[in-house]
Image (tube, rainbow, N blue to C red; front, side):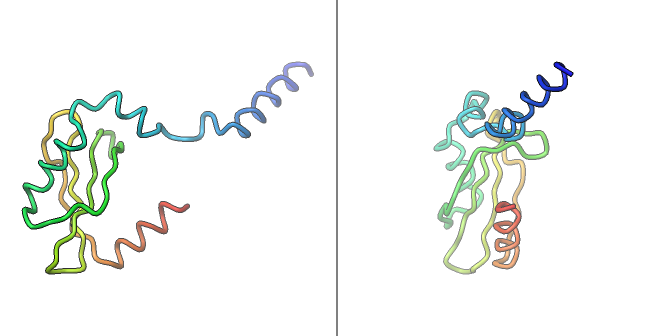
Length: 111
């Protein structure tokens, strides 16, 4: 019975604090990154020279630590997402997102 109460207390404490459920924070990920955000921005913008970075974040995507940037251009409402490897400074992915894609992604992040 004591074990059950102890275990229950531990679970309640973890739920209240969010421990064990939340992913790593950006500052946790920064400790692993070898490429600065500004260097990754330069790499990403080299792919879209007339682009403007709308947002950027450090995240783990498919097991890889990447700087992810949404880059817009004046010629379209689409946004190009460019992911730069945070350890090697190589472009990992380039995807074009329509406004509908962006709305769907924003909804998924809220969940």
